[in-house]
Image (cartoon, rainbow, N blue to C red; front, side):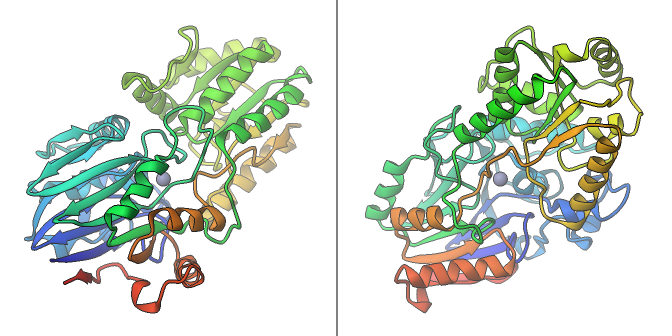
Length: 441
Ligand SMILES: [Zn+2]
C-alpha cells in the first residue's frame, strides 16, 4: 500500500503548518496554521475580517485548493499555537470531517472560532487526551505526549495497514517540564520497533547546537532575576507568551514567594489562562487577578501605580506589539507610568522577523528613556536543537526522514543531519509546499 504525503504549508517558512496524508484516496489533514509575519506585514490586517482568498494571497494561510474534492476524513491538530490552528476558521469548512485535538488545543480552537466574526463551522470538534487514540475509516490516529512551549502538545502517529507516519513538527525533549507529562520516550521507541515508514520532523531551531534547556532552567533564571529586580523597590513588570502557561505559572509562584502580588493583565493572557483553567490544566490561586477588559485593566493599573513596590505586573508585549499593554504603558496611554528604577523582564526571545525586531527595539528604547532597567531573554526555547533532534531521530528510527516547519536553509541542515546519521539519499526528502511524495509499494 502506498502513502501520499502532501505538504501545503510550513516548508520554506516558519508558520502556516498544514500537511495532508493520503491512504488510497482517503486523507487526514494535520494542522491548519497561519503565518503571522505575513499577516503582520499588512497594517490593520484582522484575520477575522479577511476572506480565505485574501489570506491565501498574502501568504497568511495555506493554499489548500489542491485538496478540494478529495476525501478528507479527519483534521488533526498537534497543539494550540496559532501557526498550527489559526487557519481552522478559514479552511476547515471545505471538508466534511471532524477536528481532533487534545482538550486544551480544542478549547483554544473553539475560542478562536468564536472570536472570528461569522465563523459557523459544521465540523465536529472532538477531544482526545494525550496518550489516547482514535480510529476512523480504518486509519488509527494516535496522540503521543510531547513537550513544547504550550501544554497538551502531541506527536501524531497516523497508521493504516501497518504503515505509519509520525508528525513531530514542534517539540523539545524536556525531562522537567514542570507541568504536564514528559515526552513519551517509551512509546516513541516502540514506534521504531513497529516499523515507522516516515517522520516529518520540525527544524525551527536546527541551527542551534542544543540540547535545548528544560523549562525548569527557565524557572531558575526567573527566580534569580525576579529576586534581584524586586529588591530595588520599583515596579516589576514581566512579559512572556500568553500561551505559555507553565512560564506564567512560574512567574506567578515566584512573585508570591518573594512577597509581591502578581497580577495578569491583557486580553490574550486572560484568554489563554482561563482556557487552561477550564480544561483543568493549571490551578492559579483564587486571589490572583487576571484582567482583560479595558475598564478593569484601567482600575487595576491605577491601584498598582499607588503602591508600585507591592506588585509584579505580568502583561502582554514581549515582541513589542504596538497594541499590547506594555507598549501602551510605555506610550503613556494607560494610568501607570514607568519611572526610574522600574524593572522590565522579557521572558521571551524576539521571534526573528523584521517587524518584531523593530517593534521590540522601539519599545525597549521608550522604556529605557523613562528610566526602566531591562532583563532580556530570561527564556528557554520550546524547540529541540541539533543534538536533541538527532537523539529524537535515533529514538524513532523512521525509514524515511522529512524535515518540516522551517526555512529552506534549516530544512537542508536536517537533510545533512540525516546523512550523518547514516541515511542514504533516497530516504531523505526535502519537500515543497503543494508537491506530493509517494512512499510505500
Ligand atoms: Zn508550536
